[in-house]
Image: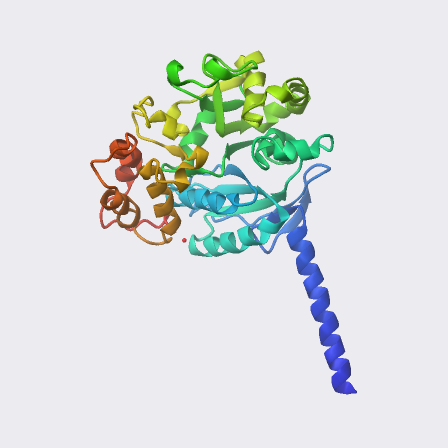
Length: 379
């Protein structure tokens, strides 16, 4: 009888622990530190304060918030983007990754990022949020263009605890410190609250100027794959009150989904947009026919849109992505990234993008030398 009671007590305890774990994982916001203290930031978001890395390890002060949205197969891409940001964080700037993901992906993110925190001396923190769309037309917003892509339109109301963020599509990788693009926020004038790169550099190849059936920004439109956002100013502008009417009016003309909505908005409010150069959102369009992005200081962020990271159409895009994916933290960046790409890329190549190898490796070569071990490069 005693053994039976003991087993019953053990079963009940295990059940309660399991329920508690499921509750914690399924909660709308998950944080990368176990010893957190609850704080409230607005009505919809209950957030958790995190233990910060020591100031000695992070001499650069300001925490940089990088936001990514992940649904379905985008989970691995988002992790690779995060890995690249850590790899090239040579100044050890404090990074906060804000992941907005489907419920089924949360545990995978937590497990991998917790491992990486241990390997990187907690150079970064993270938080995970559930997908949040307006109740009206929720399913339509969720499926607009690509699954969950429209989530970026609602960051001002979702991330009420943050003043500014760098949003990046999951199919991007960094080849330079995040701190470099973050400093562009300082170049915003008093009215600007967002920064993006042009959609095209060449009118002959432009999509918006040739095919768009709705208003768009400037002569060639802008690409939303990399976007600096001053969320405080966007909230003051009443951002969503502008976004929703555009969706209602142009919903049947939207080809590129949320990017088209952004183009319409900045067509009517061009003074609100800061346009940064193409090297911060470098795509195959910039090199596949001819080089149209000058990038004098090298390619800073690669955007592998339209699946270029996962095909051999432009080998250098696939090679850079897979080399980052296979990189192990705490190993030599020069030997395991730069040399690997140099030795693996077959030249001469029929790909015009491959011929720009030096542009892609310009920034990494500048900071990582042969036989140099760098503590910021970690798994």
